[in-house]
Image 1 (cartoon, helix red, strand yellow):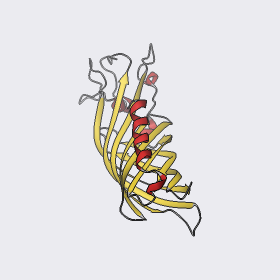
Image 2: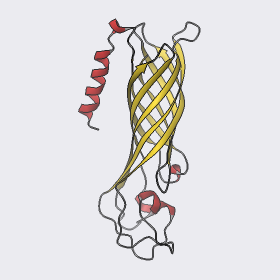
Image 3: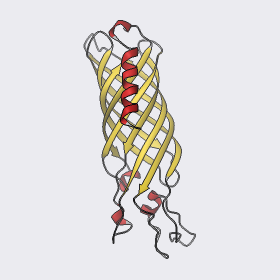
Image 4: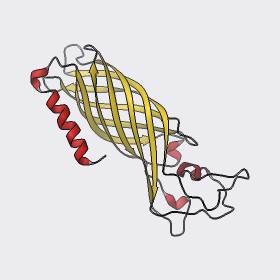
Amino acid sequence: MSRGILISLFVLGVGCVSPGHSQSRLAMNVGGGVSTPLNPTGAYTGVSGNFNFGAGYNIDRKNSITGEFMWSGLPTDLVTIHPIDSPTGKINLYSLTVNYRHHIDSIKGSVFGVYAIGGGGWYYRYSSIDKNLTVPSATPCYPIYGWWGYTCDPNGYVYSQTVAYKGRSAGGLNGGVGFTIRLSDSGWMFYTEARYHYAFTQGIPTTLIPVTMGIRYH
């Protein structure tokens, strides 16, 4: 997603929730942070950044439904599969989810709040390699090849003359908790949250915990 589109989405959200709309039913959030992969994903990738944007509907003062877009990097090391003249590559995770959030925006009249959030939707793991890397014949099919999308024959070897897949889609679930600090009486809040994501990606599931900080409205 380009920077221009992200800025446009944020400006649109800000325009819809100006201070004069304190009773608005609109809920929105935008933020970013750090994603930590968990096994089995953690065996093949490292820590990276993430971005999250969401918009939805406040059912009442404590319950909301939002649709969210998330991007997270999944950096890996291709030296493990091709140590000589190794190519470079990267994997990105994109998701579109629908989530329910139960929130208490003010704990005992303070500016601090807390919430629980969970939902599910579509996850897309996309890999790219700087050149078409052909695996030599009779190469044992170690798990790292499956992560990149290479296929294996019944004898346990990587199919010769094959290259990694470009992308795989899967359904997935997520759940987590967050904390808020009210910035004004207009409904704007600073938030930080940690959420567990599990996508049922074919071959090797995608599992990670993004820790995100940003701005939330209601």
